[in-house]
Length: 112
Image 1 (spheres, helix red, strand yellow):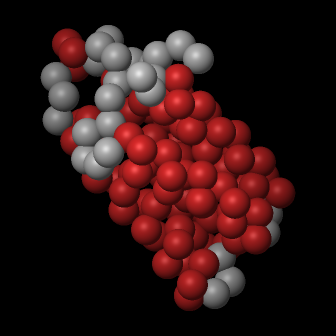
Image 2: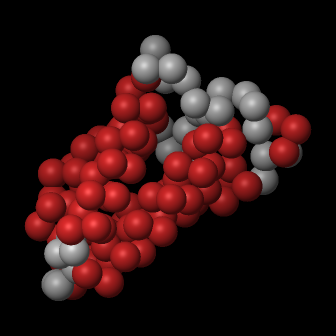
């Protein structure tokens, strides 16, 4: 997998955050909402840090800032395993699966 730029990572994280917001409202239990909210918090912190990067530097390769790359990958993997039970609308489930896969593969592609 090719590496993604800061600009591409910002866009991907933003799209994932918007989809997770839909997912949050579709979740039927407090436990499911907590799981979605936890991922939203992690990605929101990452997005906020990326927003601080100068626009002139957005062409540089993206690296996880707010946590370890391994922790973010593990969190995404765990969320992927439960996400089909949380999303109830087909469009949300498809969008979420696509974005989670893109994020996970980009992180795996930039590892090592």
